[in-house]
Amino acid sequence: MTGRVALVIVSHSAEVARGTVDMVRQMVGHEVPIAHSGGNPAGGLGTDVASILAAIKTVWSPKGVAILVDLGGAETNSEMAIEMLPESWRDKVVICNAPIVEGAVMAATEAAGGGTLEQVRATAEELAP
Amino acid sequence: MAGERMTLDTAMKKRLIAAAAETIFAHTEELSELDRAIGDGDHGLNMKRGFEAVLADADNLAGKPLGEMLKGAGTHLVMTIGGASGPLYGSLLLAMGKAAAEPADIPGIARIFAEGVEAVRKRGKSDAGEKTMLEVLLPVSRRLSAAGAEERAADLAAELCTIADQGLESTRPMRATKGRASFLGERSIGHLDPGARSSQLLLHAVCDVLAPQLQTEKAGAA
Image (cartoon, rainbow over all chains, first blue to last red; front, top):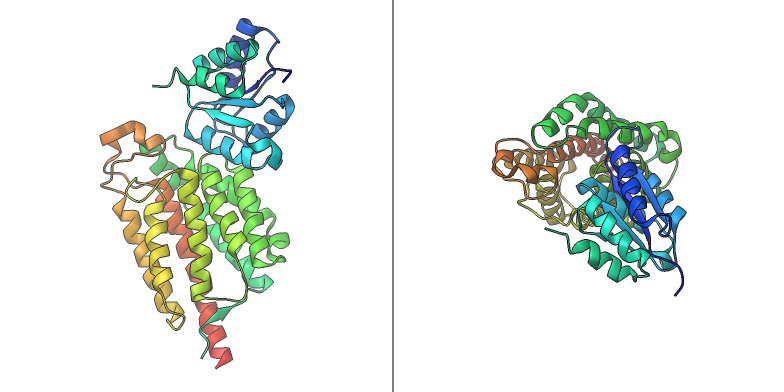
């Protein structure tokens, strides 16, 4: 399959989400499609299902999308967003159980090398405590 | 003889939405205060934002069949709350909406509610004893499911509220193992769970609106 696994960064903080993308870009440039979502619908700290959904759609890759999250609500809201995707997409989107910054950098490196969705996820999750 | 059955008209649905929103608005600061003790302090404002969106759409929602109204309200909560309580309360209402059928008697309401609570359990990957909203929802659902079609609605509603109160209080000595409060470990002990408090508040609001309605319909049918 052509293309790369895409990444979505979901943080409670827009700045953490943006900063994580910056760190990933420094490692892999623009080889890996990456989008981010940070902050609640009112612009404060939190997460936003609609914005997560939009981020997944922006970077959608037939090879799959790996999501990196920070705290609990980011995971729950990401799960909700995945359920709102077209049915044929859902099993190609996974949430990685990994620290958001380190996990994103590791996942991006694997994705840039042409890794599959499962390989990208496994690489990120090697960092899980 | 048939048990008490209920079909909610538009005015009743509006009252239900208004009552749920009002109790959240009246306790916004308290919910955030509880959340500041063991979480990130945003539960009150998040719930307020969610119920503002539901209330703003009340005329539209109240005009729909019960199932569609619940799903519509659940979607608003999912899309606007911005914390874990969005998907949790959203899943509760979405699953209740899917299960809803009118007119509903007490066993019917019990089935609808049980579907909703099961969705919360799955979404939160949680169960009883973990200091969450489930400490209120699960015992209420169990009692409701055990109720017979002939039970007096007002008595049952009062009992459900008492069970919700006890469920809320049971979270105080618990140690949190789910959600942000779990980071505090032993220090989460001694505080009420904010999600259990919002669940208990909403349950009181819903019972206060529905119980008299069920009584009236029975009187009308007799």
